[in-house]
Length: 515
Image 1 (cartoon, one colour):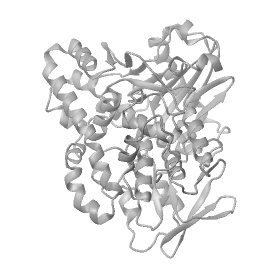
Image 2 (spheres, helix red, strand yellow):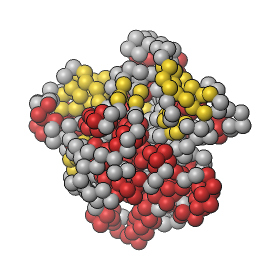
Image 3 (cartoon, helix red, strand yellow):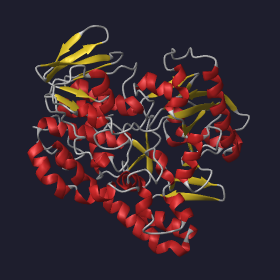
Image 4 (cartoon, helix red, strand yellow):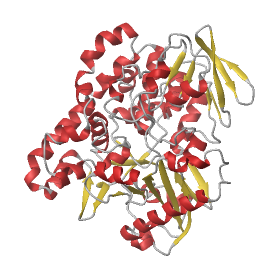
């Protein structure tokens, strides 16, 4: 997403752009895949704010897709949090969100109101935190302490430590932090800044791309091509070429050498500097820096197909989040120590219920996706085996996860039991194979308080003419990667594109930011 956004913006600004994608399809975690007559997304389960035409995220999507990308609102309830003793609905709209929580916790009204206030204020201070990332280092050093002060202060604290100031109610804290799977860290370890961004992102509800997740790449690629660029798939890069301390192009795995005045890596910070930069200039301590930040957790995903429509099955758009208890940190710690312990979270998405175009493309079919966490180390013994041909204990391990996930599905969505005719489980090795994340992570770098204290996480690298984009620059997820594309383009074009894009009228087709 970061790479496609950057490519679209730069091509519209008159740059000659080539996107190199190692997978057989472009889009990264926004791509979809088909199997046995079904289609599933791999990472776009819902996106916030884009149903509001004046929202920054919507403005950026409209700009990079030339207004071709359309969205479907998920309705009043977008997340349903399932705990052993109660289900909590997260409703769209700040007032409805708060009022629904107050119904569950009437004695905590003040805490809920104060929590939402500080979460939204923290999230909305994020723009001032990231703007210095695109400035020249002297200006960044001068302005960053002032512009990013508010977000840095709360982003440098754990989610749990901040919430403990508002309430001692453990159930309320468990409910408020139930979206921790959206960024991959429980409240005792995650940055409150990251948590606040997710809360604010979905506060007005969730949305799904019309035509499925692949509509994102499908609408961006023509914009790149219309402006003289090209997107090449099955084109893995082996090395970023460095000469005299600057990036001068790339070496593909097929042996082709491509020269370029700029190289932009969207494959992640760790991949870039541990795999692609073979000649790191002397005095560049980027390798030492990234070794102090860990990759996020990996996951398993069960893809399910049913020969019956979502409507006839009564499947609604709202996601289900299922937890074994309210203490998310304890749940995860117990699971990491003992894989047979209850899954710390199970996320269930119903994409065929979210997409209004689904029945036109796949009549009388429904799909479900189930996600849970699974450390890469549990699958590491098979990392040197070939995708689709792993045998022995690997298949047994996958079956174990499949059975456990189906057990949860049948408990909370009992109407599908006996009606599933296809399922397939992806593991962290699948993520490693298709998306090239070495530890199977889906959220890039961990979103800890430590991560948000690293001022060097910015688009421009210490190597001349080498830039980064993607979720390591801003935050996790499709929205974070999209905004990183704007930041990277801003650093290259030396202008504040966040401001430029916000003032572009929707009806006006802009072909160049300089025009």
